[in-house]
Image (cartoon, rainbow, N blue to C red):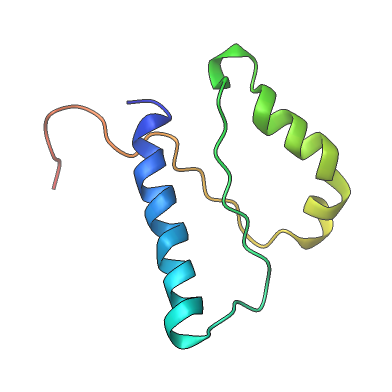
Length: 79
């Protein structure tokens, strides 16, 4: 459930934005980065390295950060 359940919504979001570009020639006003990390439980290596590499840019230009690591959990839906 952890990390893998976020992969499908991440890929679907990227697909939708790609289709907007193809069909409507729409482009966002800001850069959108879709990222997926492996090795989360082994010390956050992927995400940590990305942030470390791009820290200044992220601190000055990030509008939002969405973490969809665990999108589904358990057999019951709470409404």
